[in-house]
Image (tube, rainbow, N blue to C red):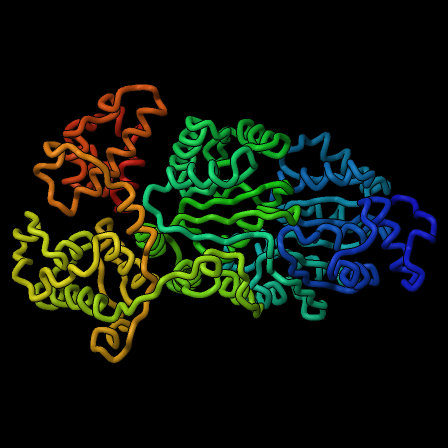
Length: 622
């Protein structure tokens, strides 16, 4: 325990306990005053009371349990879910002169015994443990022999069974209350809805705990969600235009996407590292260390990266795939701007994201209750993406916090254009109903749009869909605008997708009042889609698109633009990547899977492995 500073360092009106707390704060951490509710929380726990603390990332949660542990004497025991998080905390504490250690699976037996002995002989102020260690009798017996000052349960949302970071080992933490009832407990998290909060209280038996809820608002973060068209290129432009040379995190859904995106950034002169569970432990650790230690690096990662990352100068967090929940999105974006300076949360979002996430829930493991919980979480995230109002208002409302429009999100800075989508929605819904009820047929978005636009495709003719009464009645919207309407109807729950790989569309009960004209429908006009499509029109060879339907010309142009950029990055002629003939065949086939793409003339195994995911993404986003 660090020695006290002179009494003059504390405010004269403070209680003796808080005078000591402020001296510890100043001596150990170099701060002159507690922030927000920190002082109240420290006082509560230092006096022996339980506490549940909800505080945003960067709000200073660690102070809330570390200072009481130092004030009370003995050993403060901290339950933490990740080895990397423990190590960061321990290193920071040791740098501040606090005697801290962590017991985890990365240590050999000799080192574990040395730490246990240090705790028993009073040589430790704080001891970090993984939750699974509390299932071993050796650890329980060790804790029985210690003078424990406080139990701190970090990342307490992990106890919530329907939460975004559920850890089964957290369910056994009720043993802390049962076995050591006189030791104060403090549970802390940055992401808890009212329902999650209630589950934490119930599972950890914190019924008598005082609850401290700080504002979830991070006013320095600007939230922006853009229509996804060519996400990697959009990301490159975003970084170059707004955050060149600055540190950032890019989240992708798959390992392959992580590696492809990082390669694209590096090829364009943006220094990027990768992090996902498929990498060797040594490489993951080395990349994380570089990101934390060096300036201006971009980490491209799956959500395996980030919990406990305490890098203050992350200037942006970007998502190339839709997060599964607002809790996950909030936690991930909260890694930006921890120093309080301006930062950006940027998300590229499109129809394929909605389809993919819904299919993942339907195909995934778990009982119906679990799937319903996942669906509710996804619905809330989709509502945030599609809102016509302030994004921050909706984000904070999810955590039970009322607020006014922020003036620092995209919908505040550039209010979206609304339009009465009742009639277009009726045309689409009517087409789906006619196909399913009259013919027993189910189709995906692309074919439905062909019908509405009156495209004379082989598939339309083959199914005689040009005979439908809705054939050609949707020409008031462009293909990309129709996709935006479908995306929003899916997000609002008026459409559903099949769980199979074809992702066919069906209507829900909620859509019936719209279909019957009993309910008006207002949607956002996807100006970004129209603007990007228009801006990318350029001169093209008549021969290159001669046998393509007019509706597929924009797709062909996108593929050519991607090929041009890829060729420039690699320093090779464009035809080395793909010929015009191959791009034309890809546009005509519109492949939705690696297998389908492999059937296109000119796409061999090597090019499929290198370029396949990028091509499929462009086609899907079209």
